[in-house]
Length: 416
Image (cartoon, rainbow, N blue to C red):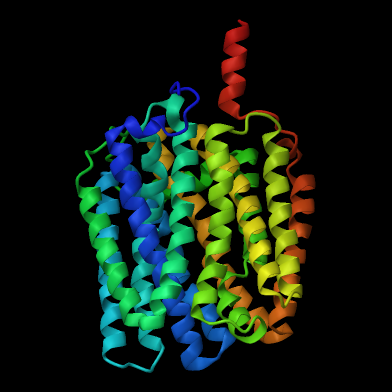
């Protein structure tokens, strides 16, 4: 197929291929670990609050370090930052393996090692988001985003399923395999060549560190897209409660939990493959709001059902809806941001994403303790729908956006 129509043609870029392989293996390992950690903690404690603490332990250091991490992504080599962070994640996996083999029954050491994981992820997030645009020509960037997202979600599909299956032989097996994958990921990342990037050598100051935050608040389109994801997923994310739903409502084991964790990734992967070949070019604002609304509706039904098949279907739809929103938001942010501050803007984006995911997990654990497990999930989905309606009114320029900004500029130039 011609390069213009083949979504996989972007793999001809060596750096991108190596980076993508490293990201797939690293994500696969982390997803496997997540299943093992969630089931292991809930099996030891049967406490919904501790499920929320898994997210908080990762988010707290992330929040403290992320703006500095964004500054580092603009000041230092992004490839080197990603490689170091993968090495730290490998250390986390080996530590979890050591805890398990020692027969440890306390949960606080798990939370402590997750703080290290959250710190590594804080520095890895901005560098990962900012490096992609440097690895491919601009005309291939949208295809690279779609293929990177689809590959990421393939790992999100396989990781929880493998984690659930391997957990049959014990959590130690899961952690050992995950550590091997993280080692391979680290090696692959070292084999990439440093892509060209615009860097600055000014010493870090509060003014320079906060540059990304000022940029985001000066662009209503970027602010609206980021904050929509923040508040929608913050309340609507039910991932942290899946071990409890699997155990107490659906009455399935760790393998079934792995399938539940797989379903959102499967929906997202199918959607992103379609986007690689049929990218969104018109009515981008409506597509983004529609994806978030679909995510919220799926969450409401997930909380109301006690059927394993219906729960799987809901999570599949939620993943597809979230993928549409992620795709539009990522293109908006990257095309609107100058490369010199791309790391710092990506850091702000990572704060919003991290808050919606890990802080959302903590919120889910707290509300489940207040309202009950299923009511908390339904409540979260309803809030997501309300946020979607509210953001359409707060950011009408985003809701009415027809094309991506760079497409508008290209059309205007062609008409001159």
